[in-house]
Image 1 (tube, rainbow, N blue to C red):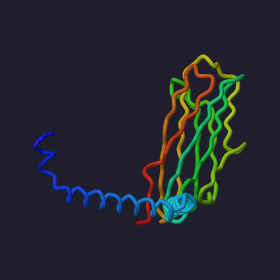
Image 2: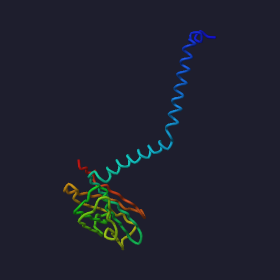
Image 3: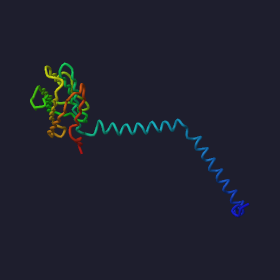
Length: 186
């Protein structure tokens, strides 16, 4: 036997054993009272609260978030499909959108211009009115797609954005342009 074993008081050892037995019994009682169904329900409630916070941000807090998506297709010519996405929580008004298809010498080949009074929140505008179909030009040349968009946000501020996308030998390409920073109400 070592000298440490001789220094432990048998009464102290008995008290520690009884204390550990009490703690073990309380853990068993707690485990019996907390049913797994209650834990699952608490988890579901927590997820619902987090979902409510996200929904509040997405649907309620006023913000301006505009994006332009283009799909370029090279077939028997060139097809440019446009989409204006208002992902903000308020409508945008006085929307003017322009697509220009330009050759490598910066000469305008074809263009499209669309004006709409408003785009409601969390919606997009696309379809035939935002389709530019360019026929009769070589698919082997380099071209550029120039977009310009202007709108009035929920504060009455006029916003304007433009972007240039280069088209070369891609048969299909998708371009996306986030229009400036998100404008918050605060």
